Length: 356
Image (cartoon, rainbow, N blue to C red):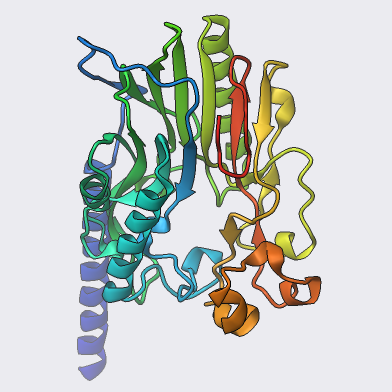
């Protein structure tokens, strides 16, 4: 008798669990983010304000203000996807202060959250816009899902995140353009829908400058990064044939041509950066990056920079590039995956301050 009751209880529990799982997948399927191939916002162009002859650009993956030195990120082999609320808020304020100090004419940001659980519901885009009065903002979502169920102990949960382009001069228009790459079902319901954010600006000469913000796939094994790069290169080539020069920046999750990653840079089994296929770009394009500083830290463990650099060096404002090689060996694994692609018609004056 007891055995039958136990079997019935187990069966009922299994049935209930199956029902909850089915409901979860049904809601995820119904609410799946399905952006159009192209979504364009046209700005008021009655009196266009052209870009000056010389402009500064800044590109920064802000990691939803949650990927600081205290983070050991689940997808990189760590344990979590969000830090403490107070630290996330502090990170965001410091990011805004850094952007204010930089004073770039055009700012390309990636992983900017708008009400995500991992960043405690902060509308980071609105906070950044409020901190940078006088800039025009364009936003393109590339990660929007009602619930990401991993990691199991503390799920990422609701996510709304994307690309944010800010500019001192208003663009003629900005377009969210979907990349053709996609994760297979059912993963795609809980993962990113990658895109580029293309903004067209008038220039003093009467021409148009295209500024593209991109964030390419990271954790794939099926060639999605190459597919996205091929799509982007074809898009830029077509614009150049139309007489539109371009600057593209962002987090490519690939390293640029002629960059030689060290063995430690390629030793994280969870994320392995690939070389960008420069052959996909025509002769009218060149790659620009700052070779003196890495742009990505592997987040499989927290990092205490003070233990490596030391308080005296930090007080002098010395960073990675000033360290001797034996000190660099003590640092966490880093690499370079953020860079620019510049077309003919654009002269690069400095690659260290992104001046074009």
